[in-house]
Image (cartoon, rainbow, N blue to C red; front, side):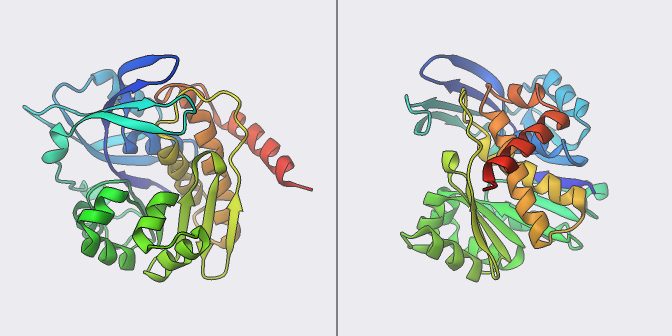
Length: 300
């Protein structure tokens, strides 16, 4: 089933201990869409400026990603992020952020998107996420991402969002910030009691944790030897997870667990190259081979 994602599209400058890349394709909606496109048709909603390279749109279209919802705002510049990774490739600092078009982004779902059954609200202003939800009243599965900025500045709106979505994806530090809990298991259940049916806590190189009323479990990361660029790993994880759920057409417990695994595996391909290059070099067959390795790794 088609999957709609609303988020950011960006031009990223990435510095790692060994290399630097300037103004490569990035943004939460890009990584999510590319990852989800292995499983299901994707419809993207985001905004760019008139400096946006046309070849990036063509790259997305080549993955059967519908860009009807990609707004080009004339006279504005595309969102830019500049990040620098530490030697361990886990810690990073934001060198510079240029919001540019994001200050003007008013997400409007095209009419053909409003009947979507699966919706992902990628990291962004909670106020805008709520506005998108209002435009898709018939959605069967709505999942959102958030971050410390919105937890700190739009907490009241976030509490409303949590009562309206089916799932929330966030990282471990954000879960602790949102709940005030230092134990991740308590934090996960605390977030779930705020409204969503399930909560996924991303733990980077340590995998992800899942919380629902009836299940709590941890899936480890795939043991990747070559980490080139961790940017977009979390968004790729969410895209793989949601893409598989949309492909299967249900979110039963066993489907959710397998969707989590696919998310982890798609993210493992992302970190092996800069930008979406790792995903470009991957296909569904390679993903299935890695799934078999992962399943064997978890069987004892």
